[in-house]
Image (cartoon, rainbow, N blue to C red):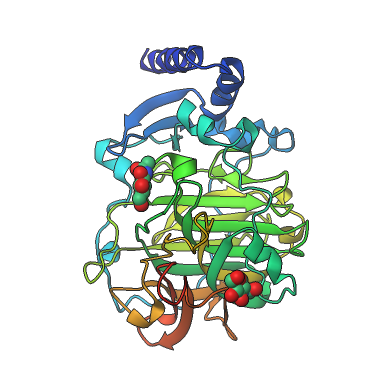
Length: 403
Ligand SMILES: *[C@@H]1O[C@H](CO)[C@@H](O)[C@H](O)[C@H]1NC(C)=O
Ligand SMILES: *[C@@H]1O[C@H](CO)[C@@H](O)[C@H](O)[C@H]1NC(C)=O
């Protein structure tokens, strides 16, 4: 009874929203595609609704090539390696899930939590078909590219550390901030990129981290997110579960949901750990959050180059500088402070590792850095006993030296 009631209620709400809008049928079609019938719904304090959807009803299985996909309930393999746990931060001591919606409930076993797409979410997108996708002018920092103009043109700016080679995974612990965004069509994110292929038209990418994106979510909350593409952001891929792709198995963490608490300048630091790795048997790319919560996986069949291995890993931040008033944007990256300020003030990645050809986690060799305009956003790397390999990155955007 409960189940049916929730479904009926969901449909009624959807129908009412669509009735009120001009392109109602289109929006309704899309809402129905994004929002699956739920067993239970949880209202988060930030206004989100989290639907607990049966694991076999997730959008991934809408994809023709995944119709007969046998869902994997756990990875066959988990990479092991060094663990730098000596410097405990508050997030490691607490066992709770650092997401706001969990204050108001949890999803039953056998379901996964999905952030409900609202009519407003879709209407904010420049077109219905672009909702949940990066724009086709999106660029990944390409440190070795001669075509740096392209990066500047689209207004995307990065401050990253990176390694090149042959990789089967990547890991890091990153602190979480709430950077200010100057205007709603800009964003600020901090993430790990796993990349394969050329940067032109066939780039394969898996991205995991946190972001503030008013256009995508309708507010300035810091949210945990993923992205993937297999054709350089053209036709394939999306954020979170907004298209068929990532298969989630975990009932505790919602992609696209707000993270809480957030680090404070000169105050408590809160960080999250992310591990992405390739299952050597099945070829799927798995993702783990924290110290052992396996969220799910990207099936190998989504990709071309990444079916084999990643050729570049990046850790760092990206913002959009729309330079709307002819000046550099004031949108912040990370904490909004430069790397020089160090722990408690600057944003960091610590315990930075890669998975090598023997499927072991290792401290990467030859980490390099890249940023378009170091006076706006900068990056520094280092190593010590407590943190292993680490990165400080970020900046305020517009300032005296970044007009
Ligand atoms: C987000 O923050 C900016 C200022 O940084 C503010 O102008 C804007 O109204 C905020 N947007 C929302 C949706 O709260
Ligand atoms: C990007 O543009 C800025 C300002 O126009 C310039 O100073 C900088 O050198 C450019 N960066 C790259 C990597 O081309």
